[in-house]
Length: 233
Image (cartoon, rainbow, N blue to C red; front, side, top):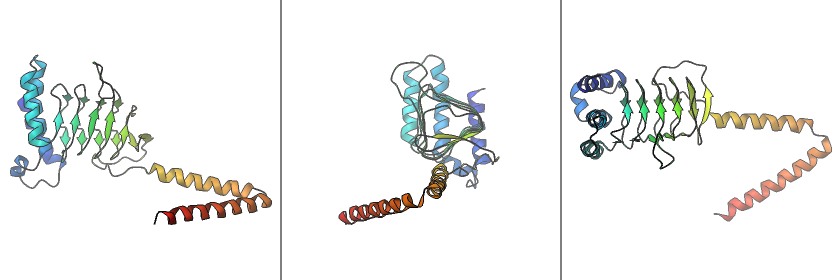
């Protein structure tokens, strides 16, 4: 697609994705993500023609202007929306599909310094929450959601959710709207609930004599913990 048509589509896409936009005038002052894409579209088109210095200069100027670092070699699809955007880093061999939403402080980075494909590939209709880090030559499937502050180092299947550090992949059963990235499973809560229920089952299975010994050990551990806490006062 022509660069100018892509840019026009980027501007229209903000109106579709951000309910905080009240006038076209705001696009020119309050949307660094939009301007980062604006600079990148030109830099990338020149980079594909074999130029190196001018695209890097445009990229550096765009980074200074928007606080968003996008390598001119990165491939970014249509209708990508970088919301707020400050602190976003997109590496050289990154590939981003269509209709992707990226929030602030996201890093699409590499984990090695050798040449070749070392940055992630993001599918279509993906939502990447604020502060998420997606690292290495991995693939994020279409319609996937990456939870805020997650660190993803493995592939994420289609229509799945990845949350945590390191990120764990959870299949989503409930269909949500494209921007409902706050609807994330609480994996730690599920694990703790499982452990508590498991302990209850084990306690019920113990003979009475062993229960008394466990209670004494539990009491001693509580005292040790209390002494440790008080020692830091």
